[in-house]
Amino acid sequence: MYNRRDTACTAARWSGTYAENNNVDFLFYAGHGWGIGPYLGCNTGYPITSYTSIRFGGSGNLKWVQAASCEWFVSKLYDPANSNKTEYERWNACFTGVHAVQGHRAITYEHTYNNQVHDDFFDRWVDGGESFYWSWRQAQVYWIYTVSGNSGLQPATAGVTSGYGYETWSAAVDTLASSGMGWLGWSTVGTPQY
Image (cartoon, rainbow, N blue to C red; front, top):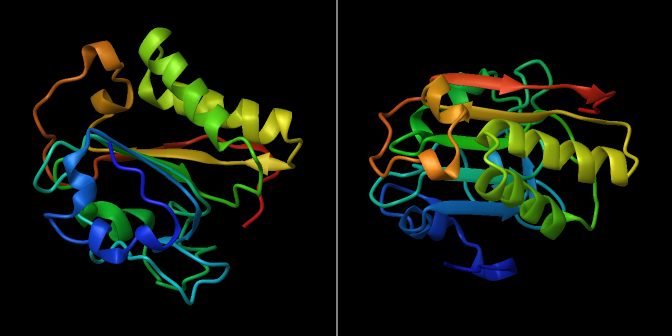
């Protein structure tokens, strides 16, 4: 397990096939983001890296990625980075062995519940036997929408195949998934902001 915070969360730890984040089974990122991926600081002038250099699962054990971060899967219509690419075009090459990546299509609001979201997700997925997708959705809806009282939310999951979207911890396979993004699913709660 790695715990990289603030300035220790660098592009080198995220970028390329042999990135440090590929050496863990599960990656949880809580921080700022937009259509191209994660960034540090309070504006997009401080990118960590982007979909052009991220290769999730490329050389190691990484199977699942969660981003408690805004707009990773924002639609082309609302993309603040103006990449003029769909979610598939932006993220497809990042799937080099990882089973699924979870994030948001819209703004995920400032809140103080990242630990609770993470714990609730794991309780549902590992102990409760709920699917990967459903556990993420329910934890997000409860903590970020219901408890925080925000106006809307769009949790999203992208996976290699629909099978991984419904995988539970106990049913997880150790082999890396094939390359390429296979599907994208999301649900809309309330009135999300872009």
